[in-house]
Length: 450
Image (cartoon, rainbow, N blue to C red; front, side, top):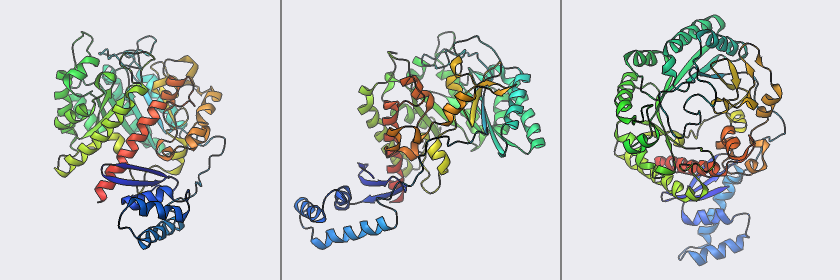
């Protein structure tokens, strides 16, 4: 059970069943004590705290709690299998194609070392990309729908190859019974009419990088000549989004210690007319001046709560927008396999470098200790693959005992590695921010049901 108060609501989350209850103060206190105190003690304490409450009132709540318990909606047992060993499938479903290890920007917080990932700059050839697509088709037995993300560096620096690879994948998919979905992540500097037309037609999703207010964005996201990028990219983003006509996109920002008031950046982007927004906490190297620390956590949690409240206000005013981390499907959502096993890093999802190297995901690219193989020979470092395959809730006692485990699925392997030196480590700041985001997301759903 996880109980908390937020946005004027008393919220009870039954962790194992996923049931969410919005209750009054009396029921909240009774449920919080239920099973830990005797019925007589609970009755005494409730009557002492609330004037005018009767024995019958308290017993009625007890009856409701016990009915919900019988129905598996409160105090339900954790029936999930946390058995040791692999939980993911080893068949691929997605590739991140790093088509460019070059970039036309020099973002301060860039984990990719301004696009080169700590190695030599380079562009993926069509032949290498073709081999990657063939590898994905061959390694995805039993899967019909496959995903390819075009990433960098800046993928628009290799735009003609991106287009060639999309066309090749479409044709290869028809011949192999596969359906491809494509995503492009771009900083926007090279967006032109050709990019807009092609992405509108062919890309399932487009991710556009912007950090919010001009002064915030331009302090971190600089062009190669040292100038800011905001004035260049915002008009292009607006044109691209308008052309998509409702097709998926999102504006992805990063907040650092320089803008811990990141709500203002999210709202700024919403005021620009963008409705699909994300703002990610930076994961910085130790002692980076812009890095976030546990000292920042109270303010960051306050910001997440403020954002949730502002989203509800704007929704009522018919000016609503979506925040990626507050998207929560309470009636469906990910299957149990994914909830327990996570994103599939290193097993179901791999990143490909310009020379065809295979890595667990784009955030591990450049670290040779995480090289899994190549597109010609497939995954040859099977011990490393098995290490990622064994990640998930079952791998850590801290996760098995966490109330947010079915939403988190064990967290990001790269963030854990960068923070602790182990893909099975616990990135504590990230965990706490994630839990706050889930609390806010649930509160928004509760408010919408009122």
